[in-house]
Amino acid sequence: MLAMEESFRWYGPNDPVSLDFIKQAGATSVITSLHQIPYGEAWPLDAILERKNHLAANGLRWAAVESVPVHEDIKTRTGRYEEYIENYKTSLANLGKAGVDVVIYNFMPVLDWVRTDLTHKLEDGSECLYFDPVQFAAFDIYLLQRKGAPGDYTPEQQKQAKAFFDSLSPEERKSFERDLIDVFPGTKMGLSIEDVRAMLAKYDSIDRDTLKKHYRLFLEAVIPVAEKAGVRMAVHPDDPPWSIMGLPRIVSCADDVKDLLAMVDSPANGLCFCTGSYSASLDNDLPDMIRRFGSRIQVAHLRSTQKNADGSFFEANHLEGSVDMYEVVKALLEEMASRKKAGRADWRLAMRPDHGHTMLDDLAKPAADNPGYTAIGRLRGLAEIRGVEYGILKSDKALYGSLKS
Ligand code: DNO
Image (cartoon, rainbow, N blue to C red):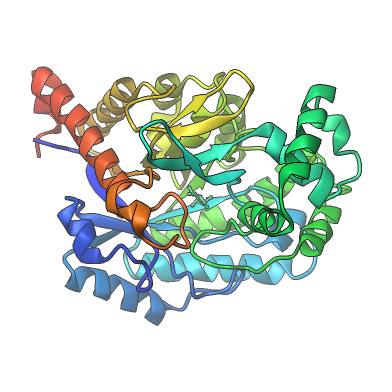
């Protein structure tokens, strides 16, 4: 009955959520990366094949790489960026040879996704990831001590940020700092606040237009290689989708998407449609974005967020919050049907339930290194989304008919 490929993120052999568990959740593929390879280095073919074969031996397909990270030097076009771009091309060529054909990446300057609280308690006792601009202001003004930071917040936010920061003990400040800057998926960079300052300094002369230019130059270099290798690139949106730490953000809304798709107009230059990231900005109309840019979506992350009146947001249950999951899934299924009709080989989209609450037995387990990626919360998310898809296909005979393989 179902048509979307159900996938699950897997952080590799050290992930406490095993491949067996992933299969029990009902997923038929995983989205994973070779986290042992440092940012910037080329991925050797044998390491790719080893991972692919390991997954296959466990009955799972490698639906997409998440991520082949883009080194900071490439974003700033400083240091060893030329070498890193060459390495990126090698990685794409090798992935293509191994038959791994979707590559997720992001172009967020300095940090990856950011939250200010990784264990925010919800009324039902489960925990979720949470972003509060006041807490972020406390980080920005008092820990990072970024020049000009106060000016990015209202006087009221600054006052509350001070009160929040004063309320933290020295240990709490340390762990707050870690939660904010050690956000690189599947790896601990061990960055210090000084490292982040040094990384930020490289952006002193990089405004929005310059960052966009660097992005275009990156795409112009790698997309032809991806095309030749049979690999489709999928950019993950900025999370949260607005400027932080005074940095430009260029993958946050429909206009950004329109621009980046036009930078290199190729089917290999596409999107990882992350509903959670885009949804934190209420200006983003997700079903509309899917209808507009659907032909360039390579893979989807499905989750939702709920905004509070004070501008903070938390990751809601997958069918709650501001994302209309019914409309999102329907639009994705319609996109798949139109691809199938057009004879596109890549008509079947893979999606993974993105993040999940820490709930049930997972609450008693030691905090894992991968916030948001507990087994049970994602199992719940996948089950709910599967139900939505089932309902849509069961009640729309024409759509179901056009997707039946
Ligand atoms: C967070 C993730 C992101 C994503 C990368 C893609 O949970 O969605 O960290 O993997 O930004 O490059």
